[in-house]
Image (cartoon, rainbow, N blue to C red; front, side, top):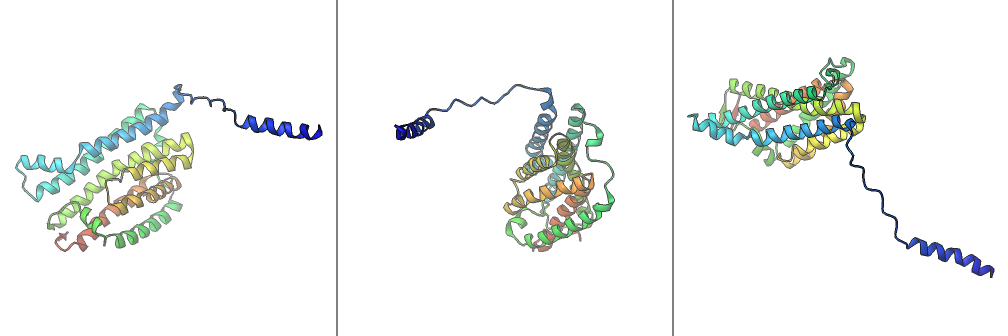
Length: 264
């Protein structure tokens, strides 16, 4: 009898473990006004980048210039420059409009003066790291197929300055979208690391059309640029590093390319 009393609870427990579990409650999809800022920021940033990526195609802009009598290689260079300029304008103004519509305070746009006590260290460290990485990566055939984007056999000094200026204008809107529209406002909503992680993942996905090495490097680079922006209190230093990275990529690729003379 005593043995039966000991075995019976074990049998009951074994049978209970095989019984179907009650269904878990379905996720609550009820909308709340508190979701609007984060949902609006994410949808706006995604829509802005997709609109720019498919709407400002350098090949279509090149064809548009050729139809208006612009000959090669000026048409190819013009298509690249127009893409950068239109991208900077579209992403920048779209970000400002989104922030204004969502009533995000200007203090959360990340455009204030940097914290100078740490900014210099960040700029020096990031610039040295980027320069070393690009120097070795610029030897790769995939890198040379993509850069420099202007494929003329000879680019004058004025043309090189125009290209650098177009890079800066484009990256001004680009950084404003990733850091000013996404990072700083989302930090106020979610906290630092969730905002940094989401922003870095979107930043990496935005590089899927690039060379594999650049796309893979964009994830840790996105984390570093976000951390740099938060540490400095603004995204201006990240913008400076990004411009340095773009211009140096162009110069290194032209230097290594046997048929391109750049800035002469």
